Image 1 (cartoon, one colour):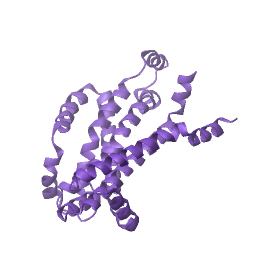
Image 2: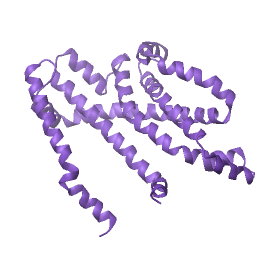
Image 3: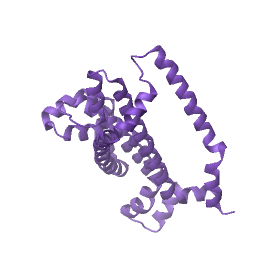
Image 4: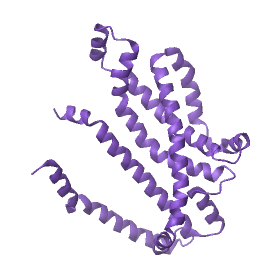
Length: 262
């Protein structure tokens, strides 16, 4: 039997999907029990999924706004962090100049600067994109810089014996070798970008769309079902993004898996 056929049959096996179904049932019963005890904290699951069923266009529209902010902000943060990581790995003086600022930025409560971003950049998407970029910046910078510096000395010596230039070492050795670290960072920041976009929508004034704004408005109107429906959509978005990164990682880094199996 071919490996692809065995993999498809593996997905059909109860041993693969059974634990997830059991866990979903347990969570459902636990949710119902907790909702009965704390009706002002949790909404009935029937109301939540009924709302998603009755108003799919509304939630899809709001989800697209949040997802767009998250992906654009993540893209900006990734490009800036990747370039700075290369500078850090290649130039010690750049490392001494950039890392203290990056550490200070990482420990700064970014939510607190959201109002200042609104004052500086207005009520458009710019404050949300900047805040999302800042939230995603540090994990990408640290992981990428670590990956660029983690090069086997024996391989580096081979490149030195053939008089490879610094650019050639970076292009053919350091960047490919850093990809596992980069994907590890992406597995963190893809879901984190959703959190960043929602935090920005909740704290940056002038938001008129997005799931964060939906949660804020629904909370002010005591619409608990809408709040939890939006939270469910956010959790689903984060899970799908994480699944997407995992699939891309397996496609891109298939060479590493095959090397480990040999």
